[in-house]
Image (cartoon, rainbow, N blue to C red; front, side, top):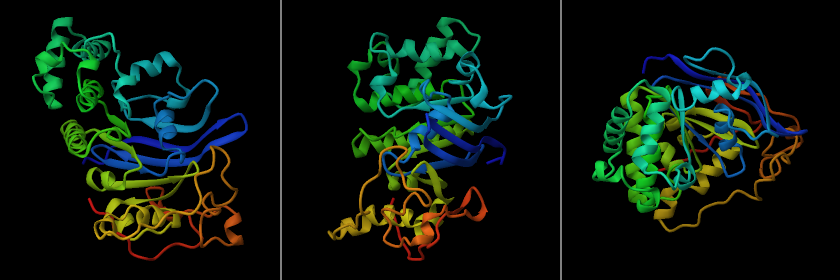
Length: 327
C-alpha cells in the first residue's frame, strides 16, 4: 500500500426536500486499502456509494465534498457528461443484482468489450479479445464460449463475475461493491469475494465494500466504517472494532452476528426495535431509541471521540465488553 489518497469524502449530506438522509459523512480510502461499510438495511450504506458515483436520483440532493484521485474538482459538482467519463475508468461499481446491471439483449462478451471501448483507444477486435481475457481472470469457465452467451444463460454467480469483469475492465482507482454476494450461496460467495480481493490487489485499487454481513468484512477488509441513521457512528481497523466495539450499535451488530454462539446453538441477542424509515431517526444520537443504555444526555448529538475520522466513535456511553466475529 502506497498511502496515496484515492477517495476523500468530507461532510457529505444527502437529503430529499427537508428530510435528511445522510449527515456529515466523512471518511477516506488510500490506494490498495480495502474498507468495509456496514450497517442494517436503511442505514444509508448504499446511498453513500451512489452519492460517491453521482448516481443519486434527480430529487435527491447532495452537499459536501467527494474528491477522487486523478479527477479535478468535487464530484458532487460535476455535470453528467464529465461523470460519465469518470465512471468505469477512475471509479467503478459492482451492484447487488447482476441482472439489473447487465443488458439481457446483449452477449456478455460484447458488454465487457463495450466498457473497454468507452474508455480506451482500441479496435473492436482488440476489445473483444481483452473481454475474453477479463472473463478468464474472473474465473468464468470456458471464457471464449461464455463471451458469446446472454446473461440469462449464465448462473447468478457467473453473472456477478461478468459484472466484476466490467467493473475491473479499465483498472479503476476505486472499486465500490454494493452487497455483491447477497444472493449467492456460500461456496460461490467465497469465490466472488476472492476474485474481488485479487482483482483490486492486482491493480492496487482502493475498495469500498458495502455489506450487512460482518463475516464478509472480516474476510475482505482491513478497515471498517459502521453506519446507522445516515451517520458513521464508529470506524477503525476491522480486528480492533470487532474485538472491542465502542459504539453500542456496533456492539449490538456483533452480538446479533456472533458466529461462535450460533455454532454452540445458543440464542443470539437482537437489537431492540427496528430501523426507522429514512429521515425519521431521532435527534441527537440516532441510535438512542433502540439503545438500552440511552440517557437524557443522548438527546444531543454525541461528539466524535478518536484521533481521526478513520478511527473513533460517537457515543456518550461506549461499550467496553469484548466481542468476536468469526470469519
